[in-house]
Length: 297
Image 1 (cartoon, rainbow, N blue to C red):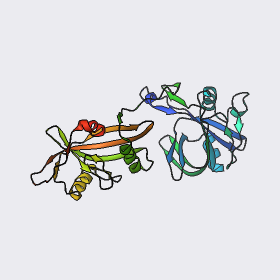
Image 2: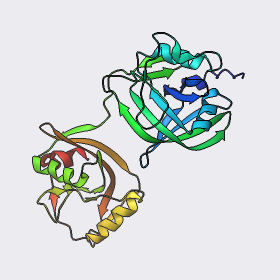
Image 3: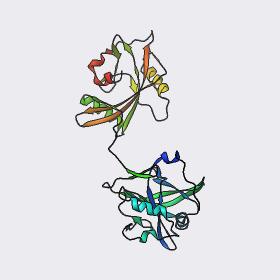
Image 4: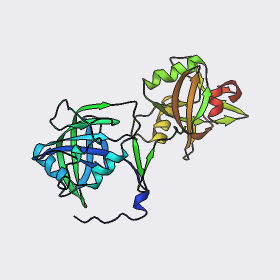
């Protein structure tokens, strides 16, 4: 099968690399694949895209199962061989000192040792898309090795992960009670997503006191996923009997609240607000009195 060489632009995509194991009439086989990814949490599903007519696809169609072996940084040779030869050309898994097989738990197809992740899959869907075939497998067993670092592919070359890149979040030291307040809201979620309004007057900020806490904060709420943030905020303010005019341009503040070694990530979508004449609001606070409020203006 002839394959078109990717254009220069197509090589700028960055992918991970996996080795797909399968088994056929002549025993187990392996191929390398860039386009492999998790596509569902519940159930855990893995999608992979492979060439139509490949030996691996024929094997999977027959056995209805396959292994996904996410390559580690010290497996460049194995990936190169797995991707450079077809199963009809060479029994790749028998090459001396290249591949070490490990026994699967739930399927009959062997896996490859020393990978970052080993996944056992049962085929649930197959569909031709363009010049590739998408196979989707339901994960029946999965394991990982924290000592291994994944292999990255970019512009025809192999790369490893560098140092972690810190996100552009502002770190804010807060009182213990404030941190606990947001941790309780988070309920162990990675990020708390809030929407609030900032009303300024004479160098002070409008604040309200929570019904279950003595903490003073700008008016804010936690919208449900998929809800328009500004619409939710307006309904919240109306419920709180706060007669404010809310502007329509959002501001994003991405924070890490800290107290000692404890942290909580919080996103604030903020809108500027102004008091309507009929509003009866008297609670104001200087932003210098509260580090969190200061970080929001």
